Image (tube, rainbow, N blue to C red):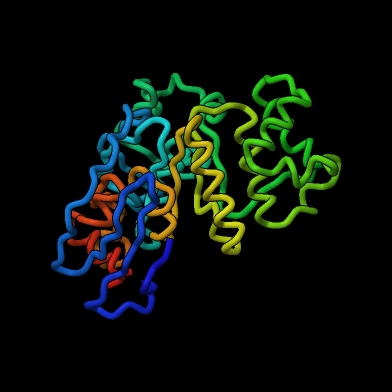
Length: 303
């Protein structure tokens, strides 16, 4: 995928040209202020939702961080959440496996249905939930153990008997096996940054979750490692649902089936709050956004 103009160097009236992946939409369209997109082939319909968010709100103490987020997240697809810094992308993502439970003073309201089950119910065990909904963080976070022990750790925590076959399959799925098969006893920190991130993905895959959440998984990686992770995401989406927070719009266009754009309302300190402006297929968001705030962001006029 190529871009003709980078967001931070875009003139106020210059469009950013974003080429969508073959699976998302063709051909390429440039979105500019006041300019609609030409009609193109329809994007395949997304599948049934695995998550249903209804009026989701998050508070940190007295500060409202996210307000009124309502959207469906389709099963076995990649949903990218984009938007400016501080708009609540990561906060919303962490609600999906109740990671915000670990933040002192955090309060979540609204409704999140996961396979029809109320994820926020007190009857739901967050530890069990995180076995079904794995997470990969912004910075590669392998444990100070061997490559093999990293993969086996998650299995043991989730009551799965580790086997050589499961370890190998997880590394194969993460496109890492050929690079580490002869050094499984080496420390995980001996790997490059991109390899460490793929190891973390392999560790998540090893327990066979239904969903994998990814919070800026490529932000600390070079372009080659980034493309390797993107290829991996597209490959495993056939088996898992992926929800990915990214600040990189071009990456979102390359990998995603659905895109959610979040932005900030309120200008005064203490009044700023993240809201969902628009959600749609990659073609809809990048070729013909309905909300002027989305258009302003993807054309680089607002960052």
